[in-house]
Image 1 (tube, helix red, strand yellow):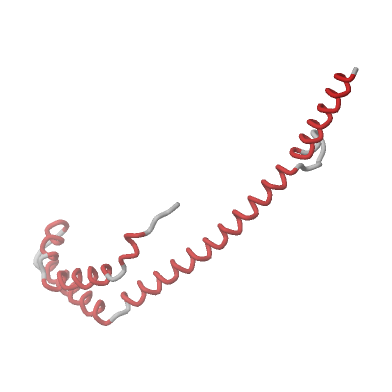
Image 2: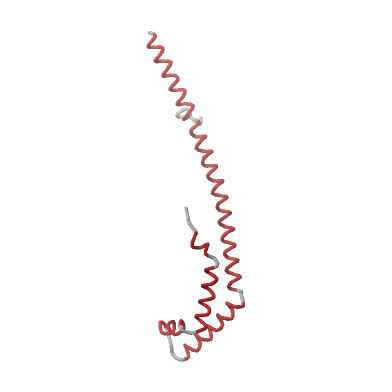
Length: 132
């Protein structure tokens, strides 16, 4: 008889532990596991929102950098020179790959490429980007 009541008592404790952890099956009652899971999701959403804001700010800064380079007088001057070279090469009958090969040998194109390479080397952050 004592074994029966001891087993009943242990079974009751197990059921109470299950209900506390998982809630009452078939009802809307939540257990501790559901609350922990909801808190974890809420915390992850907060972290994701903060990281999204940081990423948006970083992208806007890079756009501003790009605008500054594109609007600089040096780039403007080199682009105009390259456009003049393209027009000259097209008048001489160069097209497609021949036009590209001839253009890449011109001083105007090389100066523009060198300037843009220097700008890119000053922004080596792009090499360090990692997505998780």
